[in-house]
Amino acid sequence: MLATHTIDNWVLGLTGGIGSGKSAVSDMFEQLGSTVVDADIVAREVVAPGTEGLHAITAHFTDDVLNDDGSLNRAHLRHIIFADETKKTWLNNLLHPLIREKILSDLNSANSEYVVLVAPLLFENNLDQYCQHTLVVDVPVEVQLNRTVRRDNVSEQQAKSIIASQMKREDKLTRADDVLDNNRALKLVASDVEKLHSQYLIHAKKRKTTNTVGR
Image 1 (spheres, rainbow, N blue to C red):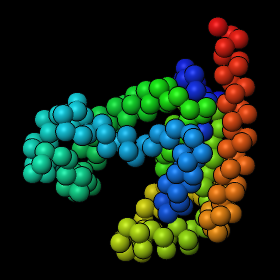
Image 2 (tube, helix red, strand yellow; image 1 turned 45 degrees about the horizontal axis):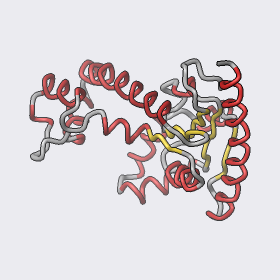
Image 3 (cartoon, helix red, strand yellow; image 1 turned 90 degrees about the horizontal axis):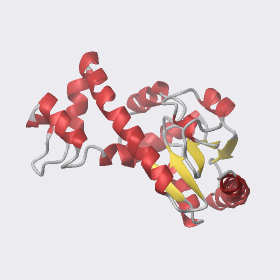
Image 4 (cartoon, rainbow, N blue to C red; image 1 turned 90 degrees about the vertical axis):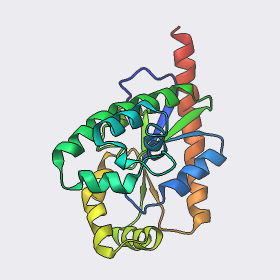
């Protein structure tokens, strides 16, 4: 996928369904020296105490959505917007531009050979437009279900609902440039990550050479 936004760095978009093991794989890339920008972490940063995002949320929903320490009570906010599409739309319209702006800033400021953008909804939110390459971390749906129930302490039905709300596994695999099977021993996955890392380094260095020549 060719990026349509001016970003000097070569960007790898890393995605996968819930319970696929994106965090473990992104940690492997980070250990190999790549900067990781995690969309979930950015989403928390833009509503941290003192931010424009949190100020707008409290102005709209009142201080009832805050914890005692002044941080956002995410569970309460989710409850408020769950059955109200208008409130949900308002919140999305506020947060999505803030998240996107912070992601782009972080992608541009990274100083590693290439940067990894981790996003559960990479394709759904069109974040792949900022990536030169995409990698899907893949496991069977049954594995997703079992991991999610065990890790997040949710019911099987809740886990199924989350999985159903995301892009179908088959569609992700079709759109991906590379697919990493994460339903194997960790050492096998790590070995494949090292091979992919070597390939991505070559692509990234070519891009930097091209950018330098073009200036």
